[in-house]
Length: 111
Image 1 (cartoon, helix red, strand yellow):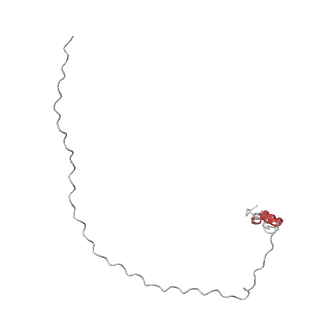
Image 2 (image 1 turned 90 degrees about the vertical axis):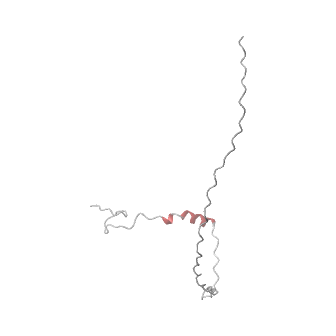
């Protein structure tokens, strides 16, 4: 059997170097003091507007508004069904033969 290898002792430990901080930045001089500027004068105060006078009665205003009758269900349904139908544009614009023929409202020459 071969000779056992003797372990070699470790070198002595050296102390770790202390962390170094960066050098502080150079001290800068404070900015120069700006001269005091005068503010523009405030605009003149406008007098408060006078309050509006109370409304006056005009001839015919004393009448009480008439009370309307309540609509029946039938009338409500009829009015609702008419809703958008009243907004449609009729296709027949009243063009006659004397006015250039029945063109259906389009301005297209037929000849």
